[in-house]
Length: 425
Image 1: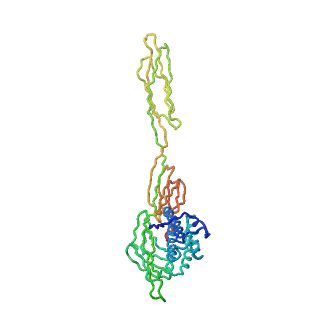
Image 2: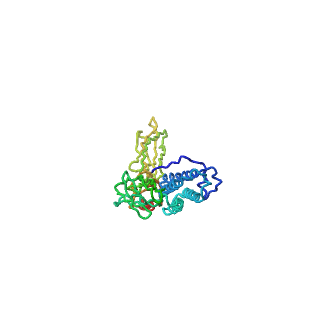
Image 3: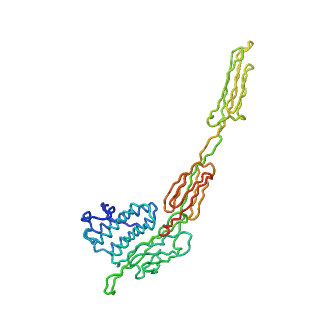
């Protein structure tokens, strides 16, 4: 989008926040400085709107800049005069313009009708203060190109004194002559002139040339000056936007832990002497259990005076005793070693992150199916204006889509909302 720059920037922002002016506040300021101050505030509004993807406020700001420029060009004789010395009619125009800019600064969301109503009063005042002699562009509609359509682009330009002396539109070095419809201009442009991207808006500038006829004597020997206005075409992308669904699935995964032990016991007692051994679950609080097919206690090295007794293996405990004795005829103690293997199994909840990406269609619901066992999702939807919105496990109304989360079926549905106001631009 073409940027406008102002060379002078003052620090007197009171101009943009008061609905009317007190002359004493502008002692020493020329009318040109006051106009530039208004335009600076308006350019800030446009920049913020473009960063936020607000096409209605952005377009309205550019249209108002055109009107202010027309006022400035039609009133060159007062630009170097002190603001306090110009006529009350011209002060009223700038008062209204500044008030309108202030409204744009405070309001972040506007319908197209609201924006047009805010600008209409400025349009009328500028038209009247130029005595309806200077060509003033009010607005143009039909500059948004929607993908999939085939008919010619029909651009309607509204203004005052713009319909004289064969005005034309120059698009990509090609001239298109205007059809005159009362005060308005109508242009038919082949759709094939414009291209569409998949996800991004394509902005293209065209030049509208109208003529300011002035001077002369009884309609003779008049001067004819070209007046150029920028016309912006907006080619919408093939998709309304794109969605990225990051979802977390919770699955139950069987965990296994194998442990081995080598207990032993020896005794010098002349009678059987026993030592008990117990092995409990390490993950009992996670519903763990011993796998009986893989849990065992077996005899290992020892002598005939050592043994394993009272063996009991259950799903939650392994118990046995090692017993030993020293016979009178034996010179050494009785002893026995055991080999113990425990295999514990338990279920553990494991979270797994996955991502699904998909285009958001203009006229088609999209269903994203993360599948069973999804416990959380984060949906990021980026729309054609550049806006990114995030929804987490809730039904969310976006500006250009509604999001519905079906917890029972684990389906996230995105229902597009056609931006009707933008399509009217």
